[in-house]
Image 1 (spheres, helix red, strand yellow):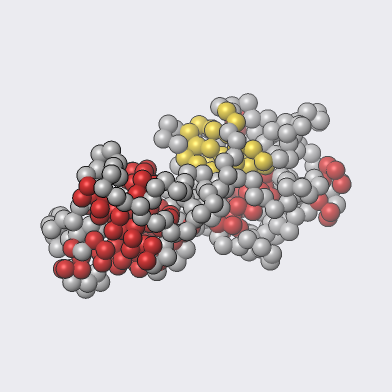
Image 2 (spheres, helix red, strand yellow):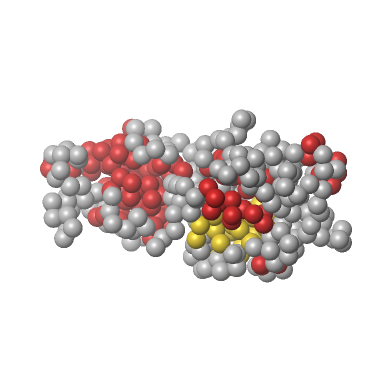
Length: 359
């Protein structure tokens, strides 16, 4: 096989010693990784009489500031504060409403909280700070909320019918929180905004380790995850572990223990089958942190083994940014890459249990 093709998609115990290629001819463009934000802690409100955000009144901004202030008092991260503002936008447009709706005629306040005893008195629900505090305590009680998509995290607290109801309010919430905090942090492209560490850039811990081409197909080329170092599958499995809270040895998900039937997760070729065997969801919608699966030959991937990557960012124009390893021909193989891809190109997206496809 030509040395101009890149090594990709090798799993140590399944395909030892094989060398195969991957050239993505469909790529729209290469995007450099952005550094993670320096501060993912609470954002401090810097609201004064001159603060303006296009499309929002002084009353709405004052209510958003109250939400952020409640979050800071509870040591809620900037991401959590933004989720809280997003939910208030989706429920009331950042207004203290003294009326409900058809599904909830007794709903009141910024968060449209019900009169069921869970959200305090009528006065509590109508008070921006108290109602925000109660919402945030509910958010913090959701196991792993930081790993969820913002709209899913909000839905776990509010329990509204459509879990994706809040999704369209996220960009506006980011804009408002940035404006009210003086713009001293950025959610875009940082681990503050994304599940796990997806999107944080090239934080793969074995980026300087030798590939199997350099040392042969022996155990010296095996990462702690049981894949060959600097292969697409090893990077993707690293991201899976991160997002499920396993960031150091002993790692929770390995090539040899991922599938409940005892088979190895294997090369990229078998990842879809591995997901199915584990009972994890798949779908056609890109979600940040989901594994991108290319069947053999799809999108220019290797005709025998395909390719896997990870969704780094979802765009509004029908594309997403994927990140991965070993997706370029030599001399850029076995290294980190990002690029924008049409959402219709991959065979499917492999979701983690804390992700789901909109129905």
